[in-house]
Length: 424
Ligand code: ASP
Ligand code: MG
Image 1 (cartoon, rainbow, N blue to C red):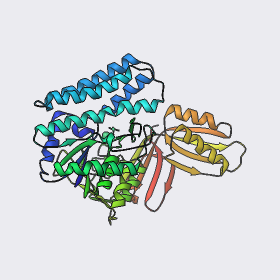
Image 2: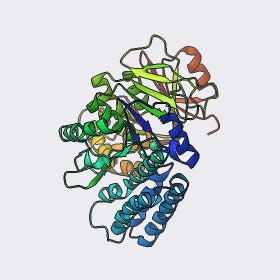
Image 3: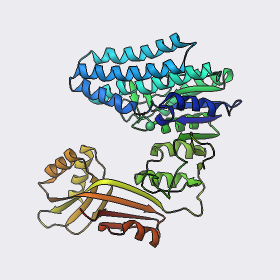
Image 4: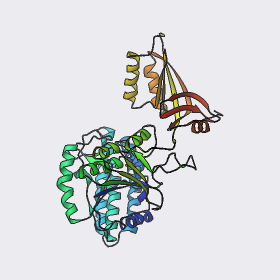
């Protein structure tokens, strides 16, 4: 059996949902488990609902949620006719659950409410796709993944309980595959043993697909995207970006670490454990090249380019001119951890530590404030962090031309260059 994952962009209009049916019709006799994300930008929209609710702006929250409801009902109208009533009822149940919560006052943590609200996106989109497919005679069974995927209660970044999840999937999914070829479920969400909804972190649907593939010993996972597989650079920045036909699990983890928006980094481990190939394919154009990710290290890779924009370089200089090592570094890392920000690049010097971070104003201020007892803190803003994997002189020269380099680090296969644009 195979696992397919369809992301938000693949279901953000009726035409796109129809396109999924066209894709599925090409696999008539295969057992496939489909993992679906929320439609388009619905997760962002639901986040706004959670924020308004938690800030005590109940009317705003309800209004924002109303728009989300209308969006889904509009799509449902196009997609489903024969089973319209049953489908509408299924959506209404999800709406009611959220609205019921929105009428309350927040008494628990923000992250708890976030998960109870945001999980609606996947429940709604997957239900619409399932009903539509059934009408198209692509017979399938819809499953609430929260009955299978057990997590702890770290809301917004829940950790999977593999033992319970494995038991659930084996007991409940395998018999269904005896009756139908197609199972449709949700990515990104799960539930605790107290039946509270949880989420696995933004873009977590890829990870869900890998969890199912691992437990079900799938022959492959395919992530369907709106681009031609994995590219060596963002085609928005480079018109000459090319598809990479083969990648190793390790390379993909490296790329994700440096900020390439390819695949959720947690996706790789469950696949690597069972040696399951991961395909990244375009859902728009089947002739476009595909990327296959396996344990094999390809011989030659093009230079892979990743930009992180809007960076700030913070310089922490010890006030007493002591070397920056041991204790003060630990303290600094504890502060970063508490503020929930991770350095994108660090460099040590005698009495200073350089730390490059995403420039999130409130966080940078907090860091400066909390470290001011031990360090003299300086900030340099408006920087871009360029990472090139498998660099060569040509790629470095081309990408740093006319740029002022602020800091640079190089290993055998990776160079990172922090730079500012010339006129800044
Ligand atoms: N819908 C979720 C998000 O946008 C999960 C996903 O797309 O993978 O983050
Ligand atoms: Mg997504």
